[in-house]
Image (cartoon, rainbow, N blue to C red; front, side, top):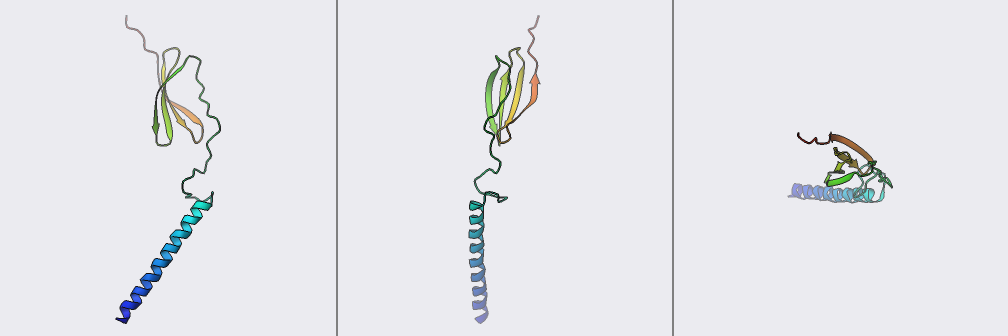
Length: 106
């Protein structure tokens, strides 16, 4: 019986220390902006202005948000089409796909 009481006391102390550690870690993450695993904040601030240079007369079509990026379809004035990938955290725009203007069949 004495062994069972000792085991329960040890387990109780471990549970108390475990909750104390969890509380301390939550406090650290909530108050330290440079914590490597900060809760609910993005450490890199978004740029104030994002510029995607498009020629005059371009049209932006469908937009789709994938993970942390915005993918959108652009139709250029000459009829060519492009897919742009925008990363709002860094402000970079990539153009991975370009399709030439469709020629009319004769």
